[in-house]
Length: 550
Image (cartoon, rainbow, N blue to C red; front, side, top):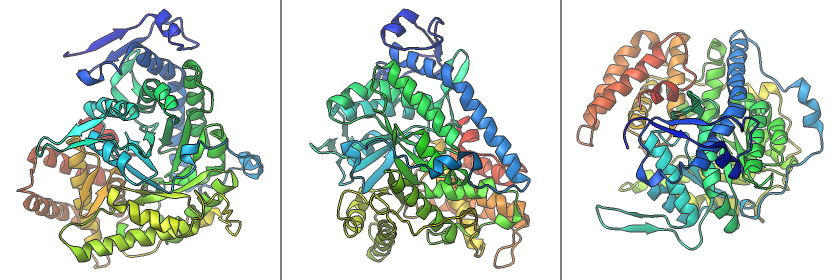
């Protein structure tokens, strides 16, 4: 069907589907402003959309208030205020509480693979040796309408074990093995809208849209198969944002007559402000918590973003900001100690490397980096880690097997760790180089170009990149221009950026001229990226203006 589709539902039907709301007497007005793919028509059913509308009406006001609170907090940081551990929640940090019991299929999470909700990716990830697969609607997924709704179809088929994929080029068919990884879903963050779904004329929260559609269409089958609705929660900046998620969970479970506590969620600690509220975030979600995760690339981006107006917080080249830097090592140690004290899993970060074909030496060096990274995480006390490619599963598993005698390391208390606010805020030293600047341009522009074409998980220079890397690239350049940074070679970045951008754009175009190069999307991406890094005001997320172009 074409054009705008208006779906109006009888409140009596919604009540029959156990959609309970304080506004149940109101007639849900839901607009889908884009064609619904035929495969997704049954998922966008009356009960599902009524649940979306109900949760949106009940909680979107609070979501917008919390987003406004982010802006206020940013203004305080811009004026020089330093973040710290909250005095008003000291009792929570001092308390002896623990989270609820972890489900059996989340007890051992030593290796988790991540990727977008693309059909072949889902099959390969679930068939991989990893213990769990995080199916991603967020940073590794470009949120085109087709990607979002067909991603829900793919997950439904995976849960039902009917999913298959045929490669038209060679006729190869992909299907699920008998034993598969545990499925975990990451909805989009609180800051994002779903522009193709309107409730009472208002864009619905993308978080609520992704969460509600997956839950209502899959909870019964998940239960029948001995598992449950498990989620990763991205981009939280405070325990109040975790409380909002918890209230959404309770409302949805009550609406669908699911026992409260069935939903389990792991929170990505990928913002500097959330690092000061890890205890509080676990406490808010304690009925539904499955742990915390070190989302380290977004964490670095957040560190730049939150202190962007501070010349004393200028960071060196992206490649030199490794996990042995004091501020990152401190964040990891605090996360492990906090989680294990509360009986929660402490998950490590992403290995973005991918196997390198036709270059044994380069591949061996890349795999060595993966092994060293995963051994560091295991020895620090993490209970598991992330990989971006099935080819890394064996290396990551061996690293954790060499340290862990059981399914996790919850018994590793890390009582030796004492982390202060100054530890979390120590700025890493190092050089800003012309090569680092050029690399940020190349990676940032090419990622945005792919994202605008609907691809959110992009192999670039032997790494599998998602939006977090592009965010670091563009925020670093903005920061360097803003504060008049000179490179180690003496180059004035602000005065020379336009020239360097033009040179790198020409280099990219020459390198990719025979590789399905799309000049239109490339030019749009180059302009968007260039504008974002040179404008006076800083865009909180590059995906916000880019989303309007999809």
